[in-house]
Length: 325
Image 1 (cartoon, rainbow, N blue to C red):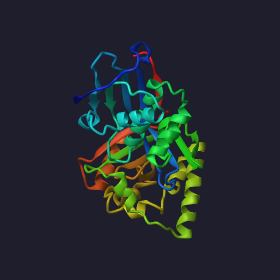
Image 2: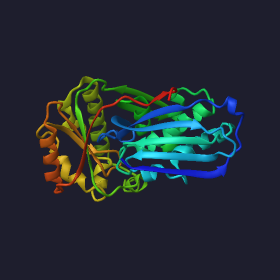
Image 3: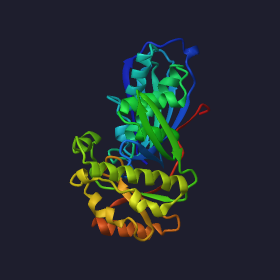
Image 4: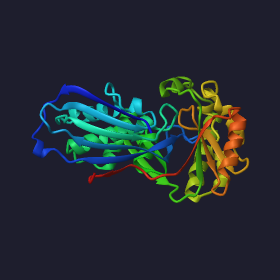
């Protein structure tokens, strides 16, 4: 396990230390958005988490931010400049007219960065939830989710991170409506991760401004079938339900695993295959009785990469917070 630490030495004026809220622990899941056809509207919470232990630093002259990070990409998680978690927290507090307390963060990250696994959604939601706690804003989880969705620009990852399981969401006049299903499903999930990451902004820039009616109808049909598959536990529907014509065809060159692994849907216990979010990682939904070692070998063979990283995980609940650290 790697470990990194940093501190931001700019001193910060503090409110009365006696009035500072106590420590908080946030556990936020990774998410895989789109699931094929449900572009910007569906996400799946995964059993990989970002855990944040945070407490206000009340000592005089305490640095504005101190971070200790362990786990995956610990060096990036421990960065103080432009740290998404802290900058989100600070912006929420500033907009709410609340003082920004100095914070000590201990972060353990399991979420792959830059792979389409919802790392930014977890960081944004985590930052909003920290601001809600240390600023005593009194927001419920839905309000935190809505604020994070506005910052992300689309609701699919953030809603799934907040609520868990398979979440569908929509935005109307700035308000987010979301619902979940898929609790208790036994399906296994595999993430196939290439060595190079892909910024979401670049992946979105590849998409066209307009689509044909045929492509739009095809995706509406499959997105509807996708919700039915998760709501009813119908794994047999996923081979068709996870097909897409709105974003995956335009991301083929930027996501080299995509054309290689899509044909595995419906083969040897692999129920469905899709790009994970904007990519370049791939999500494979697998029967609970399937042999993971055999499937992993099949994936690596199809990818032509015996060293391809494959992570086994599960469908997971949403964000949680606790106060006794």
